[in-house]
Image 1 (tube, rainbow, N blue to C red):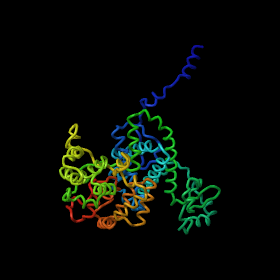
Image 2: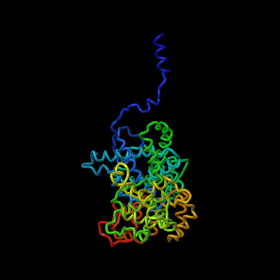
Image 3: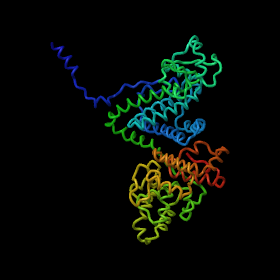
Image 4: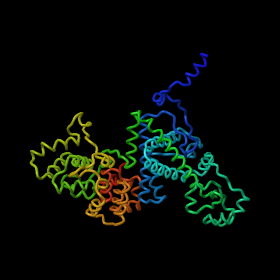
Length: 503
């Protein structure tokens, strides 16, 4: 009797799921036999928080660039060429044939491990809302397509066979029976013996059915071998969407882990506009006339946010606090010295005395440059210039303030008027900007204007081969906008080592 009661109590024992949630897990070394992956199995090994964030940011750079290529109407060939150097830099993924003797070495394992983990980290970050899940699924499918099409044919075939997709091969007898229908439904095919077909549920290939490139009979789609890519992509997208839904249900369990939540929140914000790190070399322009006296002339190379600050300053002889800070850090980033910056602000504030300027404004400029402030103000470096992501998400402008991003914070009518005032009159560009803004693609709208304003110069550097995709990566920082504009407009007038963007 006692033994029965003991078993009964054990069954009814309450479990504290908050404790078991983060209990020590059993980790297993994972194998990566193929370059490609459907990401069906979550990673289980330990990684550092630094790897967690760095790997995710590197993948996010690629996904953001893929989305930008799509929004900017680049062809599949242009997108592949644009992404090739970026993938090699941020998310390399070599084939088995790239290893000595075709044996998977440590380098390949490390590449595939980073690819595996970074996918699941971003899956966590972008499962919170339906919009984020949809966008993530779309760009991940586009990345998979790029890799699938570029994969070694033997490795691709081995990978597809490993998926166990349950495609039924159409036998010769049925093939002959349906010969006329199969030929008429397969564009460009003249002889039945030149092709083989798979038979699958039509719901698995809706894109092919929609475009009427497959024969459908009794709920089955007869898919030619040549359409294998479409079938694999559909399967990839379907599995990923289901995985994202499961991840979304599990997200509340992460709330108590204060190590991961801030990182994941930061990553999801960056999906709207990727954040950009900054170093002095990113905006260095050797030989460029960066001085207080030349700011008016240099403003032709400014992005719209900085043009608005500059024109407001010239009009009102004053800017409010956040406008001064945003503009000061931008000027610092383009290479304006502290002395010249102080001179610029003093000359711009025409309605106040020297004594008032020294008391109310001088210290803030010096503090932004790191010349004064606690803890030697970050060892004398001061604050970094604001990225587009920071401008979009922090301190929205109020009444009478001029900082922020015009693409986000202006009405469409006011934005259109401002663009026209700066020389943008092309109706197609203005229509595209309106569409971008309505869909909250603010940095894409800015890039659209940049590409239009510099179309002749961009064509020149592409045709000459002096700039590659890395130098024309989507702009996500005002200082990158300035440097790229200045370089394009001064081709041949600067030292050779400064012609290309430094990444």
